[in-house]
Length: 98
Image 1 (cartoon, rainbow, N blue to C red):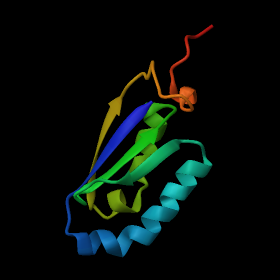
Image 2 (image 1 turned 30 degrees about the vertical axis):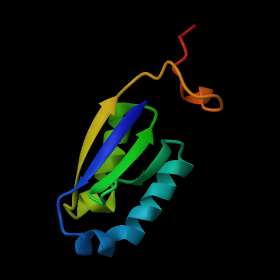
Image 3 (image 1 turned 90 degrees about the vertical axis):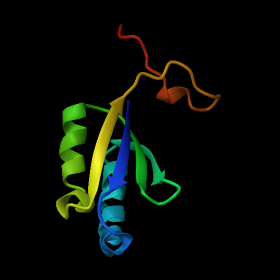
Image 4 (image 1 turned 45 degrees about the vertical axis):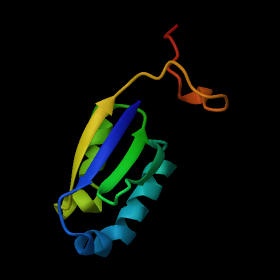
């Protein structure tokens, strides 16, 4: 699993101009099963995405984000292996390979 920390490197006016396209891109990533959760940081300096799958695929998809294409954001990826969760989120836990 991955935590993607997206940081804006442009004024919010430029971010807002690309927001609709960014949301469409997010929806496609959810539909493809890559993203599990996402949302804005507070204060509004970027966002956080929880993702799963292959790091290389994730990096390719992040490069297609309208924010990335317009040079508006930086993306930091942290891989982690969740071993414990609150009840109801067990699907996020790493499972040992058989």
